[in-house]
Image (cartoon, rainbow, N blue to C red; front, side, top):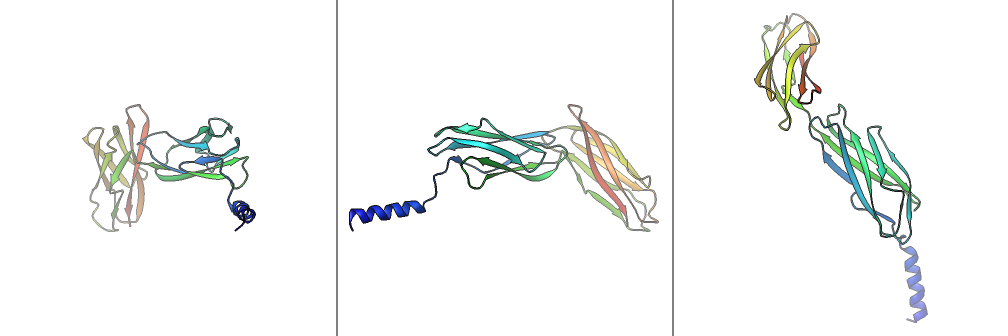
Length: 217
């Protein structure tokens, strides 16, 4: 094969290769566990400009008001490293939440999509969460257990049903850690229901409310 033909093939093959990436994101998905009663969770995405030209971030958007995101600067020279920090506001959320960040640069092409997954644990758990009576059954008391997450302490002081058809009583088993809640229907003659609100405060004085549910079916 002649050198001219080899060179021609090399140029043709090179034209099929994608353009070198500029911003190289190590991880595009970060999973972060929150602590019980944690108000905010911060995550940091690290990246580097692996290309041969400066790259400027034109826009950063999130898909939820609960998530804010910003880069440490706008333009990154070849070889420079950078970070994008995202702040997730927990509020009263519980469970696993996934939120996305869209980063648009002057490189062209599709924007980069980043994902933040936050696991928000409950401050306290009730077991069982629901107690039931069949219509016409004896109006006997039912008991649930309230257990505070091991990382924190909450002093619960009140149990109140949202309907006068039920009476709820709170009994400490281990103050700040474990409680017993006794729920009694006034009558089981007709179907009725109520939420039982369990109220307490953590060491900082912040109010915590946990709910259980009672039904006569």
